[in-house]
Amino acid sequence: MTTDQPQPDQPSRRPRVAIVFGGRSSEHAVSCSTAASVLRSIDRDKYDVVPVGIARDGHWVLVADDPEPLRLLPGRTPEVDGAGASVVVPLSTGDRSLTVLEPGEPPRALGDVDVVFPLLHGPFGEDGTIQGLLDLADVRYVGSGVTASAVMMDKAMMKVVFEAAGLKVGPYVVITDRDWRRDPEAALSRVDPLGWPVFVKPARAGSSMGISKVDDASGLRAAVEAAREHDPKVVVEAAVVGREIECGVLDGHDTDGPRTSELGEAVVVSGHAFYDFEAKYLADGDVRLDCPADVPAEVADRIREMSVLAFEAAGCEGLARVDFFYTPSGDVVINEINTMPGFTPHSMYPRMWAASGLAYPDLIDELISLALERRTGLR
Image: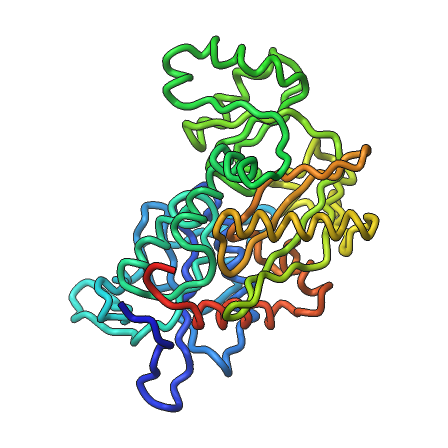
């Protein structure tokens, strides 16, 4: 097992970073948008950059190093074109080279990759799958490993971990695929004790994909079916009345503990029942992002402490955004962790770190540095 720092081919070679984005999940376009921001801001004097896209069918392709076509805009949804030249990732611990395959041409090596920045959101990327692939070949990467990525992607398992760590979570019900196919009426009846309204969510999706706010029992079945279009496993959560407060966590170097950012608050100003996909990514004027969040100092300290506790209980690495509800009675209820949060300069995670004194390009550099420091194999 390789445990030392990657050795350059020659003294002058810069670390090579493969930025991987797209993917098979419903958050494909969000991932492309994130990649556009990172490609635009990464320090080209410090790193060699190789953009690698994953098409919706799972095909890995070499992508032009141009962020503009990848931007997510109203009326334009970016997508990785799977017709590009195929990219083969390292297949053994003795190989760190990306290989390009084009029809009628001999294989072409792109050179060794020192670290992968997997800007993938949702299943088949953020959920431990690509992390496992990279671990098989001892390739370093930004962010959490297999276990933390997989468990924190699953909102039901996430809550089990939080509760075991002593963190307060809101009431919820899990509807599995077997539950629904065997007896949907029984599954729906288990939601009644939560009260109304409820939020119905795919268990393993992000960016508010497939989430519905349901005000009474008449809309519950349709909301579950809508969530099941994204994931056969569904989580139904009781509505928690409170402000949505977020905290950024950034891993420490060597044996140093995780660091926490200024807090942020997403305030829906108009046009949306909650902080949904359109509010997050397309309707700039409908949401106000306040950073630092206006909360009492003792509450801010408690949220930061809980963020570190959640980060460490989950076994996260690199980065995470931890989301909470701050209720009128003063309670702090943890909502979820995102192990690869939205990462454009306008996303809350980078904004919270910018407010903490770490600008967006420096945050990218810090995450790559943390990944390069980390040993491969079991940690």
